[in-house]
Length: 125
Image 1 (cartoon, helix red, strand yellow):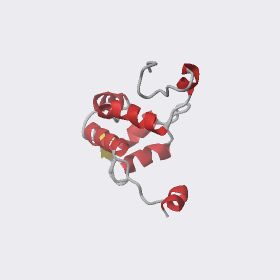
Image 2 (cartoon, one colour):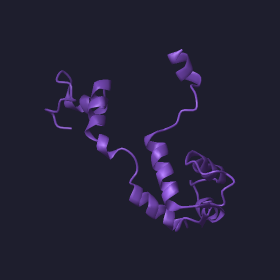
Image 3 (cartoon, rainbow, N blue to C red):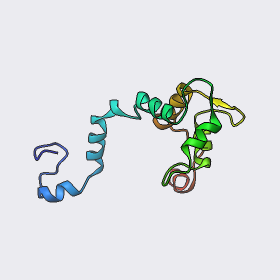
Image 4 (cartoon, helix red, strand yellow):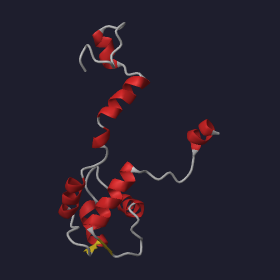
């Protein structure tokens, strides 16, 4: 951010301004990139192809084999959760790149909240 940027506070030294953000500043910055929200569907589709999802009838089991077991990567439960979030039934044996890509993008850009829990419930009361 530039020193004359509207998100900086004029009454604080620049070094301190760079370390602190106020809520109005965060709103301002978030509005700058609204059109960039979410993952790149083409890049995501290509990554899924790398993991074996080539056509509309790719094996879910094969995808799991290629996707899990890497250090710091997905677990089998993570993959099952991803399929569920994408609306792919557990009984379905195959998955296509478009259905999976669209499901992931939709889950990220339009998260589904199953219900209020914990702090949110107490806060919204």
